Amino acid sequence: MNEKLQQQLLDLGRQDEQTRTRLLEEGRLFDGYAPEMEQVHLENAIRLQRIIDEHGWPGVSLVGEEGAQAAWLIAQHAISNPPFQQACLAHITQAVQSNEVPPSYFAFLTDRILYNQRKPQQFGTVFDWDEDDEVSAWTIEDEENVDKRRTSVGLPPLDQAVAAMRREAAIEGSAPATSYAKRQQQVVDWARRVGWIE
Image (cartoon, rainbow, N blue to C red; front, side):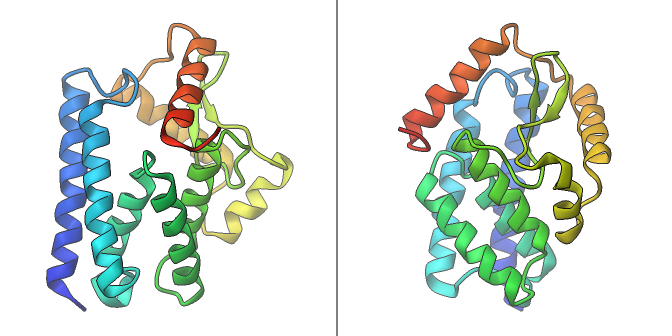
């Protein structure tokens, strides 16, 4: 295992978490996509790309479980860089096949990309406030079979995930937008601006 590389990834993950925590404490985390948070995500993506260029995808054998998780988290958060996030999905798909990362990483990143593209997700891992001001899973394709797909990648049933996300939202003080329609339009405008949709 490359401990130096593992530490680099853990440091990037820690910077992400510290920025998120500070913005949460300042009450600025849920007011759209905070520019400071986006900047951290973009910078971390650049650093991860350099690691990939030099070493390939940082899986468990290269950087241990914690390092592999940090790499996945960086990819998961690189939402303002569509080509990078889509390339990461290809890397993670191969890494799952060679048992270098858990299959849940594939599920989370697949759903994140579909959400960014404003398409129905596959595994029910992306949540947002719905029209009834409840935290719910974003639209799911073939929802009646979602728990089978979740089980296949090591995820708990969807109802358990929804309950956990609602508890987390309550703890963090997250609240629905004053206008559901306006919030959805802001997401579409952002997705168009960064290149997820035309």
